[in-house]
Image (cartoon, rainbow, N blue to C red; front, side, top):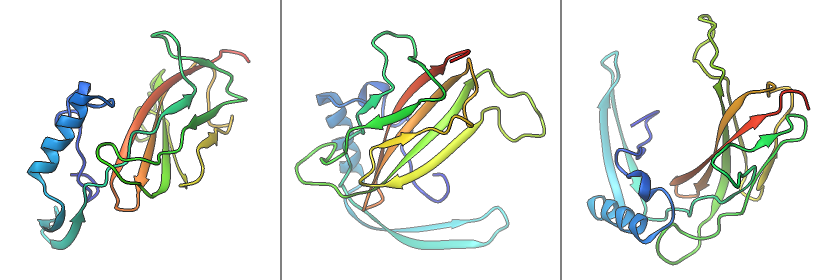
Length: 181
């Protein structure tokens, strides 16, 4: 649980279940059997001892994974990109991860993380430069500001599809910026 949101990490969904496949469908179906759709009461306590309580509605409307179309690599190496001309692009998510029926994507969220070289400045929180931006559900591309990117640097990125129910799926990618474009 993070930020008062429940999230399933790879410990819960094995790596082979993170890509569309029959095995992935079975893993998600098993998860849904454990947690039927409906209203759930949530209670907790903050680190300061204050009580929290609320109710959340859990649905089985899980959007399909966003299909990243740029940047992509045809090898095991991350694609080399021009930091002055980088567009992250994905196909619109219109279907469910499993089952029939439409989804209503209200936003996509794009997260960029600097991987290497890691930052070593102790007065800056975190070892990676992180950028996060949300775009409307009808937008399927993001031009990355060149001011954000460093030359010769490896970045991971995530594209999250956020469904009207609050359910989210994430696709990941990586790229390396050119030394001198």
